[in-house]
Amino acid sequence: MTTISSVLEMQRTADSVRLQGKRIGVVPTMGYLHAGHLSLIRIATQHADVVITTIFVNPLQFAPHEDFTRYPRDIERDSRLAEEAGTDYLFIPEQNEMYSSNHLTYVQTESLAEVLEGKIRPGHFRGVTTVVAKLFNITKPHVAVFGQKDAQQALLIQQMVRDLNFNIELNIAPIVREPDGLAMSSRNVYLNPEERKQSVLLSQSLLMAEKMIVEGERNSQIIKEAVTKLLYSQPLAVIDYVSIADASMLHEIEFLSSGTTALISLAVHFGKTRLIDNTIVRIS
Ligand code: AMP
Image (tube, rainbow, N blue to C red; front, side, top):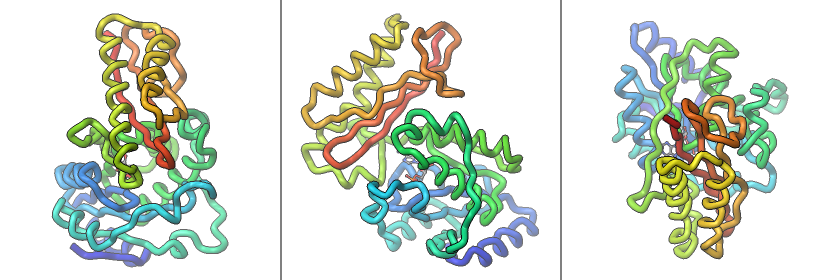
């Protein structure tokens, strides 16, 4: 595995890989890699000849009060894990090379970016789509792999790729979970033992919602109330949102009629840590 930090060197490398007729797969991450990221890298190896993993904690997608400065970082460990999972090139750019002091151009996907995470974190998705567009232009991939863990982000990137004619195939990988169900996240290290114990409620409440639907419940309000009640059965949970929305445009759904594909998503704080999780349900 070769580590590259210069944008120009990454672009030249990508050009030469393309000239050899090889397919490039990219896995954009913010590092502090866990099994979820590694599953994305492995998927990329199945769809490309050369895999580029990128690590960049993107300041543009953090609000001033968020955790940009304390976001966990461990490049040495990440390098080892990325290589073991099949990365050929690890791209770790410097912040000042990604955003020069006169950076003026941003990519903004409307509507989809304004609900759920975007409503609670204004500007977040503008940062995400901007950095992903830049990473696409730097790594020149044929295929890019993202995680379903960030369901709204995956939708936005699919939309951006269509709208801006990026000639890139997208692959959205399933959520990798801890044995007790907690979705893997770099931020899970923030949780103290008590918060970690209570955080299992996120996946449990999604399972409960799925079970209610399987058993015939079609009223979203009733499901959301049951989820809220379960989450609040633990003293540390503070809910940002519980949403049942259509899985393509993210409009909230009141009644789950047959044929609907619904995205059930949650954002919950445990102490200082904000966790998100989701599941997709197809109503037969
Ligand atoms: P991040 O480093 O958090 O920006 O995530 C980088 C990529 O990994 C994104 O596409 C995420 O959706 C994906 N990802 C993060 N956690 C998981 C997980 N538990 N399972 C699958 N993919 C994940």
